[in-house]
Image (cartoon, rainbow, N blue to C red; front, side, top):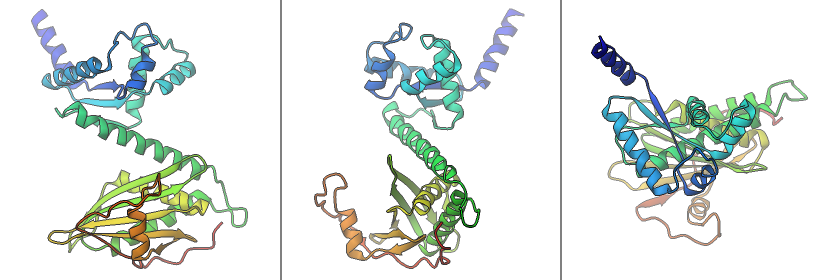
Length: 294
């Protein structure tokens, strides 16, 4: 009977998913060392132990995901929940909460050095989408027509994105949308592929994030811009660009696209152009005219 019980528990353990909260950088690791019950004192050793744990769980057949552990968010979570932050149980509960938010990466045996950049990128995307969504929600209704400004901007952004993908043609497309806000520079990236005979294929979450950032630029009438890079077999990559103007994507000239791509955004210094890349003017995406801005 004891052997049977042990076997059943092992079976159940393999079917219970596991989430590991990861302190990806040394600064976050140092912040957690203030807690008495956090016993690691070397970040490199800590990462090695995390990787060993992930390998062990995977070898046992346990589905394992990794979430980014942020000490500031953890302290705030414990304060709001009335939890003692200096316990393993509280850290475990917080890890479960952040995993539920969706910014996780499934561990499939990849090296931790390869997993961390993907995890950080996913967490940044999640934070950008949440911030952009809050911006749109806080805009309220138009004083003239009563329409929800954020919803109208998102609908307009979705239309522009759909037209851009339809007119971009076949190939592998990499789109970037950026727009400044009062507190930050929002950035969204979208990858799509389109065969000559079919529609564009894209990740629905990436599409929603891209449309949300573009909607912020539309709603705030800010200096939004979109860049499209297309790759196709046996041909150089083509780069096109647009600026957002009055709820529409106005094509940039080839010179403007070249200047935007070949200038360091932080220093303003020239950057050498890439070989095998053509810098092209934006094209008319055939979008419907924008309604008067709210």
